[in-house]
Image (tube, rainbow, N blue to C red; front, side, top):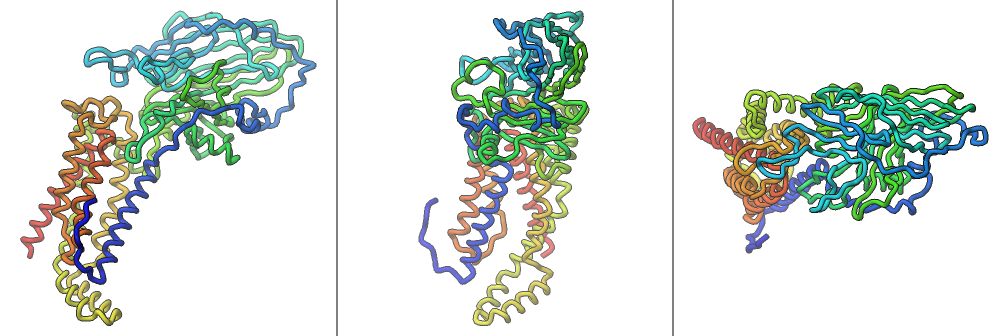
Length: 580
């Protein structure tokens, strides 16, 4: 910041400067609260992690109710692990409108792709391909990064504490909505049935395990959600939160545990809990998409950054870290020829409110609105309503911003009136300060009498703003979290409202409007020139710089809100002048 010679300050100038600095600190504190810069995720060396914190070494007792250690001497050894061939695509389930799921010869989900036009990968203005949400194994793109943000969720069956592997056979796959697979060995038979729930990005799954041996055996069924965190993609700037930060989520009781890979690493190092009982659903997600498992009965979910938890069978790609959330769905001894069955539901798709609430149990907690959730839900509904009337998300943002401005208009008018009154009595205040500069008590009494005479209060200009702040933060958070803006076209060069303005046009225009608004603000005549310059020049430039790398949908909201604020301010000033 450029510096100029300063005139001698009055006694109150340091106080004014201090208040300004406090306001700036408060702003940055609030900003960091809502958009904290993430800790860069470093690849994890699983050999250096303490064994008690590794998910692969978690005992059954730690994850579910107390279960006796299997008596291996009376159990049947596994004979089906050797020479397992790589998984091959075997059958495809397809919801023609929204998504498709490919199943493989290992009896697992091989790939999950989104077909909806809004989410498709755009190679050009006219060509697009389905958006690949999950892959069974990590697939690197030529230009860098992964083809899919998540790895496909898995159902792992264990016999006597050892995973069961084998080639599954397709036994029923006559249509595109459902299919059944079976794996049979001398010791165990595993049947898996997958069925698409149309229009809901969900696949209902049942797993039946039968002990075919002559003795009882210990059987365990696990549901695993997996992801690989690209360390570069997890990093964001101070004013540009990362779009592709992946997090482990677990909904248990009335709580939701949400942690990125770096956070899970810190919890392991600090010996904080990474296992949570009473879970209704769990998974891994990003800002806009989620891959999760829902269960009929509560389980205990566990977070991990151990690469073994991904079940890849090979080292992680360079620059990537493991992240998984899994649960033991069943763990007990099963008698000879007896069967056990488990049901679960996979979700893989956008974090859209109507889709998440349609699930049972509801997955709506996955949308992270923060402490202003009740207000955000109303705003998200209003945003959707405006889009249904005029199908353009940019216009919907403008209309929502206008609606909020109208709702808060009475408070804004009250704020401007208070500011105008305070500006009007500034000369009288300066006279009192000079007259009673050696008698603080008398000066305070005379100042309060002056406020009472003119119906003014220093706080009356702040209180309306304090009331409006939750509303504006909620609107900000709603637009920040809304997957509806993902690849949403507004007009001209703004083809994706979830990404920054590619030419920085809107941030520059916004900085200009903020500068104009600062010039219109009533200021204290006794304010130091350097302080006034900071508020009217430096602050608008700083805010404009902050907007450069934020999603263009957010910048659009702030731009419209600032423009409406200028119009509102000019109108209020003219109204006050007319009354005077």
